[in-house]
Image (tube, rainbow, N blue to C red; front, side):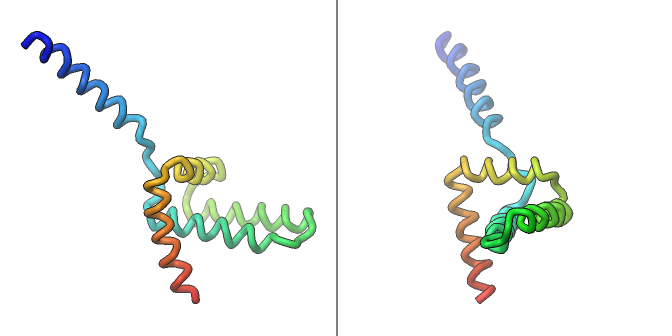
Length: 105
């Protein structure tokens, strides 16, 4: 019984610590999918442009993305980074991305 009193609190603390490490996204799954599509299309649009024009367009594009998603460039980058490190979430988002791109055709 004494062991249970020691093990149970340690187990609860471990579970809480694991739960706190799970990153929370600021964007919904739908927004994350649209963000990924927007980023991909934006980079594709810059292909083949001279560096000055590409930099200018990239600056405008990032400003527009900040307006759309209500996050700073750093916050948008952080959302993408979290997604890259979360394979289960990335798979779910990839399914949504397929739906979005299929609807464009």
